[in-house]
Structures are given as C-alpha cells and as structure tokens.
Length: 568
Image (tube, rainbow, N blue to C red; front, side, top):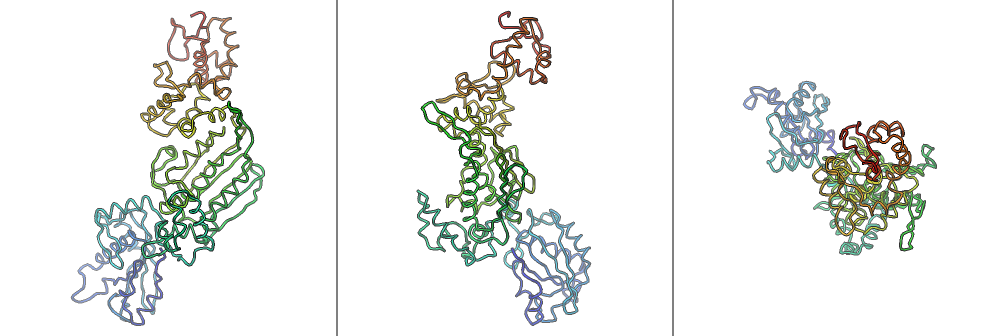
C-alpha cells in the first residue's frame, strides 16, 4: 500500500487544520510527552513516549505499514500544533527494536519544519504477527489502533505466513485496464463448455466482480491489475539459443497476464520439435514423440507466471536451447513447501486470488499442482523428469531433452488411461527400468511421501486390471517390489538393468565353469564396479536363475560365495 505523504499534511496543519483530521490508515501524529506540562504531564515522559510509539509501530506493522510523525499535537490547529521533539532517533529505534516481537528495525528521519524539529518513523508491513514484549497485539482500524482478538491474531499470522499479495487493493483503477484485456477474458470464457461460459455475457463491472478481481466497493485488486493492466516494468524474458551456451536472442514482454500467457505459450510451443521419433503400437497406430512434452512445458511456464512473487520486480525467464529448457521465476517456494515434497505437499498457492481467477477463465487448473503433471508427461514421452531447484529468492525448472526412450513410451501408450495419468505408476516404472527392485525407502523418496504411504501406494500398483509390479520374494531384504514378468517383457529394451545382466552373463558363466564359484570382489574386478553395483548385478543374475548363494558359506556381506545354479 502506498503511504500517505507527510509534507502536504504538515502544510495543511500549519494552515489551520487539525492533525487528527488528516490521519489515515497509513499516517498518524503523536505529541512527545516531554512537551506536555501541567495536569496532563506524565510522571515518566520517556517511558510514556516509548509505550506510545511501540503501540503505534505494532499497529501499523499489523496493517499495511505507515508513518508516525512525532512532535505534532493532533488536536491543536495551526502553528500551535508544532511542539517538536528532542528525542534521540537512535535511542528510540533501539527501544522499539527491544520491545517488539519479532523485533522490528524502523527508519527514523529527522525533519525540520518551519523551525520545529520533528521525527518521522516509517513502519514497514510486518512479515508475521507483531506483538510487544508482553504479547499484546494491536491492529489499525481506520485511524484508530485496537487490540486484536485471538481469532484476528490467528488469521493475521496465517495470512502473513501465507501472504496473498493479489488479494489486496491495487493502486491502479479500472480505467487502467488495457485495451483488449477484457475482450480476451470474454474470448477465453466463451470457449469453455460449462456454466463459466455464461460470464462472457456480463457487463464489465459484473464480470470483474464475478472473477473476484475487485473488492466490495468495486476497486481493482492486485490480481485484476496483474491480469488486466499493462505492468509498469517488463515481466518476462524469452531467450532462444541455437545451442546450449550460445548467445541468445531475447524478447522482452510487458503485457497484462491474460494476453501474455497465451502468447508466450504459443511461442514456446512453436520451438518444440513435435516429432523427434515415432513409436509403433500393437494396433498399427503410431505415436509421435517430441523433444519436450508440450503439456509439461505449458505447466511449467504457467506455474512460473501464476505462482511467482509479484512483490519483486525481477522478470520471469524462459531460456530455451535445442536440448535444454529452463524456466526461472522470482520468489522461493510458498510457505510449507520443500523441494523434497513438491509432489505430495498440499499447500495454499502464493497468489490465491490470481490463481482462482486464472482457473475460472480456463488458463490454469486449480485442482492440479502442476508439478505431478510435469513429471508424468515428460516420462510418458520417453524423456527424463524435470529438475526443480529452489532457494529463498527463486524457483527454477529445468528440462533436458535427448533421444526419447521409445520402448518405454510405446509401452506407456498401450496402458489404460488411468495408469497413463498416474504419476506413481510412471515414476515406479522409470525406477524399475534402471534397477531390478524398488525398496520402501526408495519408494518414499521417489513419490515424496512417508514410507507408510509409499508402501500402500506402490502396493496398489500390484493390483487392478493391469498390475505393474509384484512383491520381491526375498523377505530378508525388507519389502521390495519388482516388475511383473509380463510387464518387463513388454517394456523390452527399456529395462536397462536386464540388458546389463544379460551382457555380463557369458563372462560370469565362464568364470563359474572354470572356478566353480564367484564373489562380490570378483564381480567388482571383472566389471570395474563398486560394492553396491556388484551386489545389484549378482541379485540380477540370481533373478535370472544363473547363480545361488553357497548354502555352506556366509549368508551376508561381500564375502558370500555364489555358485552356479546347476551345481547347487
């Protein structure tokens, strides 16, 4: 919220107005208790000054911020209101800091106004609920400060930890709506096949209200500003590179989001190669495989623009080369979301009001987090899942493209729709194509859930019309799953660990024929592997019925002797 200017208000007081008539939700005047004499004087004016200022600072911090002018009596009109102050700004700043929770550092500016020394204290909006050292919380109600109820305290704390900037009143007005923005809104609504399409017939004011883009008084909200007004600064860079690391060509955009998003999505889609390979299905049909999944990329670009931190003026960046696509958006992950729980965390979007409007007009899907769709769609076209990295300043989604895994994409295309759209199934299949088994621990990491939930979710893939996995028979290694034989056969060359074991099999069999047994160390030396890789290969050879453990030797550890199945 823009703070009311101090200078014009002081001029009006000097001209005969009272300061209290000029106070606002973001401006307050205070008289220094040191200047009060007679019956109303405080026994301890310094303590009283600190108490008054701490209350006012807390009040503004729990609202939208504000300014406090110290040295002006708010009841006296004209020049007589300027009593001034001799308070030390540093001492006041320290006392305010020590008496607020969380501790606030406020700028204090000395102002000379017609020969009178005043102090102007600028209070920023708090990042959390702010109280004094005893837990008292105040909030601004018009031009007054009132204690916050327990319910109001909880609501404010939740709002501050999950702030929705887009729900606030904008400094722009309806007249600032860009030409063509409302027409595009109506075009998008008119394309929908449900009751939302009826909103296209509403007048402008009713349409803005129906989409919750204005408040009760019809004033534009920040969501309406972002969606419909031309920004005051550039909001997106589209960088195109002929090769990774090459100098990019850059297009910079400054448009309302309702016009910007469809345009950018079309531009990015036009750079995606829709067919880098084809895969034939059993029914004679063929499926084209792109270098990047258009659905996954749409989700990533949409998320970057809808969920970014609009309090920051950095631009969203889409950086595209033939093999790499990166999407960078300002602002860290929303409160309560971490990188290792992106697939499973149910969180409140940062920009709830904007997101709701985008969902209403069909530009974003509220029910989907987008992340699961990105992962699922990339896997479905035989590409790798995107890499998502985040810190407190930004989130980056990185896609890489290579020769698609045609065997995997062909098998997935043959599955029922319910499985094709099941992110658990896609991620489990990817894992089991590179490793022979999936443990509970790896399953929890893969699906980004607890081990208990992972066990239930992976077990569900072992049932149904098309079961994909089955429990591994070795109970001593804990709960593990492997591909069902029919699924492994249908995946063909997509099952890379089987190819590796098959290629190793002749050398292992030759060694067994010559020496009669083999150990983990021998496998390591033969194939230049570490202990875990050698153990995995031995387990694969055991699953292929090539080797068994020596029943008379150690049953655990790298010293286990493995015998050929025919001699056991």
